[in-house]
Amino acid sequence: MGPQSGIIRVSVKLFSKGLLAKTGTALAAAGMLGLAVAPMAAGAQTVAVPTAENPFGLPEDITIFGKTDPDRRTATAVVNGFVITGTDIDQRVALVTAASDAPVPEDELLRLRVQVLRNLIDETLKIQAAEAAELKVTPDEVEKTYLQLAAQNFGNEPKKMDDYLKSIGSSPTSLKRQIEGEQAWENLLRRNIMPFVNVSAEEVNDVLKRMNEAKGTDEYRLGEIYLSATTENRDAVLKNVQAIIEQLQQGGSFVAYARQFSEATTAVVGGDLGWVRLSQLPPQIAAVAREMQAGQLNGPIEIPGGFSIIYLINKRQVLMADPNEAVLSLKQISVNFPAGISEAAASAKVEQFGKFVEGLRGCGDVDAGAAAIGAQVVSNDQIKAANLPEQLRAIILNLQIGQTTPLFGGVQEGVRVLMLCGRDDPKDAGAPSFAAVMDQIEQERVNKRAQRYLRDLRNDAYIEYN
View (cartoon, one colour):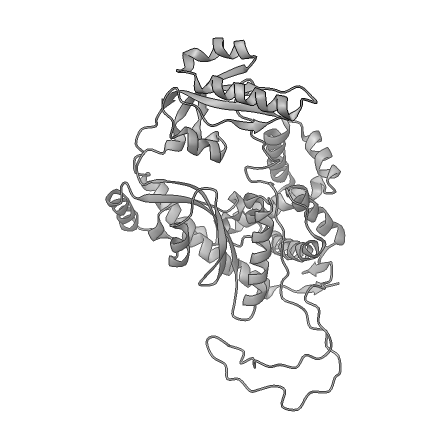
């Protein structure tokens, strides 16, 4: 929407498309045990036999030597000789908190620091693995991406982005380190995993056939934040997931949290799974998604291997036209209020405006009538429905030509309505290309192998906490 349109004010957060967005919060990992000499209570522990659910044979009642506080962690680490400093953590945390609509509570901030340290460790392992494989990301490659971000968010003025990052307590160096980690991981996956993922033509054709058979059924565009869990750390991971959900419900950016915390390869695109049908999802997620409306968040959902948080971005019918792609012609009619206006006077003006709107017979009536009551009119005939705020989009897509939305707004920003003056619906969506389906299947398989690859890097690493 061009700045001249003036129809809808949509606040866009910095990096809302992904590469930096509101980067997330939340979450303590499992606690470290501080061992100290203490007498053992006789008969306090029972003997347990290792099983599939309890591979370590841990007893249900255990005796802890000394005191342990799961929220106390060392602030820095050395990863295979590379030092992660407290400043590194502070600057990455600043990216998270600056992008969050709601203030982060003190106890949550402590857990956030723990999670950020974990992310920085993973990031370091990825960079080191790329260097060892002679796939080192060059400074020029990092700078190119950094400048692209500046172009998207600060009008090709990287100095403004530098100043912004410093003003929130972060730095260009911190963001560039994150970019380097993401690019290093992409290089590793491209070399070590993608060449070994094969998808046959028969598999792709089978998917396309099923899509045509499912024409008209629902499909969902979902965002997912995935955290892996084992039998041993299940409770700690669940606590982390619940903390993330709490922050998202208080205004955190799903895209940012996915980039910061999700362990799926879709983290680099803000957790966006693209358009999927329920049959393509794990049964636990499919059952939840079926009942969701666009804009809703749900979780934690326990699936094999961990927990998921899902966000329903949008919903449409398979191979049918997506109404959100409709191009609308709208008129915004609004009235403003002088500073200090009394409640009675404001109510009277709103009532007058409401009667005027009720009396409109179509778009041709708007301009002359609006001038008579001191209302302003702004027109735009190239508004894509998907770009409207969600609440208004649902209302407008159900309007007939010449009808208006209910009044919305307030004394501070003015009261307004939108009138639908035209609508160009998109053509029915055809089946995705053979290449697009093959790419989706490949990405799913790459994602599974990438999780195992990162797990192996962690297992082989030498990490010293300071």
